[in-house]
Amino acid sequence: MIMIKLVGGAKKSFLTDEFKIDKSDISIRELLGLLLNLKPISTPNLDIENILIAINGVDSSALDGKNTKIKTNDVVSIIPVIHGGSSKRLIFNISNKLIQVVEIKGQDHITVAYIDNLRKKFPGIKLQAVSSNFILNIYHLKKIISLSVYSDKNNILLSNKFEMDILMRFAISSQISSAINSAGIKPKQSFMLITLGNKKILDKLYKEIGGMSIEIFSKDHTSFLKKYFKITDKQLGAVMSKNPLEDILIEKAAILL
Image 1 (spheres, helix red, strand yellow):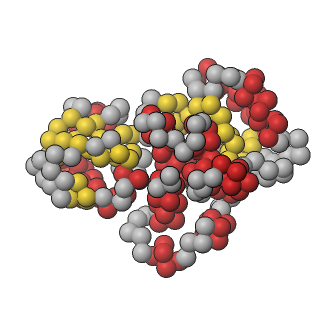
Image 2: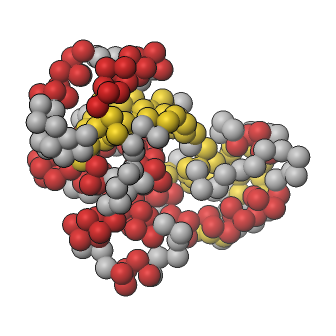
């Protein structure tokens, strides 16, 4: 028997917040197929590409992804990741944390000092700048941030700051200095400004920086990421996933200590 716990919009798909399934020793992939079959026809769809799955409180990304086996008496939590905004501004919710992401065009005057000044001007938010080269797409973006949110909630951050945990996971490095040197902000290089806070403050921040923003994910960084992290086509071909490169990057980030 497996206990299914539903969070947020997932509850609307099944008209309950939890139920049990008489199954065991099945993979997350098999469970998702089963859930789609069990969902009432008249309820909202369950978007299985935009959910987080935790087994006994542990994010499946830190286990074996969709191949993770679920055993008898396991508790599986289904958590939708909600996103919205324009092509220049992403806003989404992870575990009741509101997150805004804006891509900023690299300019001479935008340095680490500029980011520090934003932190001083908007003390009510958590803010981090990550080189655009190290973020592949929205799937990759949300999954990595989800790992940091989960780590913060469970007091297992890679450093003593949530913001640094995000940078370290995108850089796939357990060393702060290495993460800063590789995935940190650099002059004339575009970067993603990732912020966490309430809607009112995030709106004020966007008003401040919106004029420098560019369309998010307008460039494909696949080749860079494969080369930088030495990921071969053979490795990608061995991953049973619609997003093999993203899932390899996420798995590497999840197992950092």
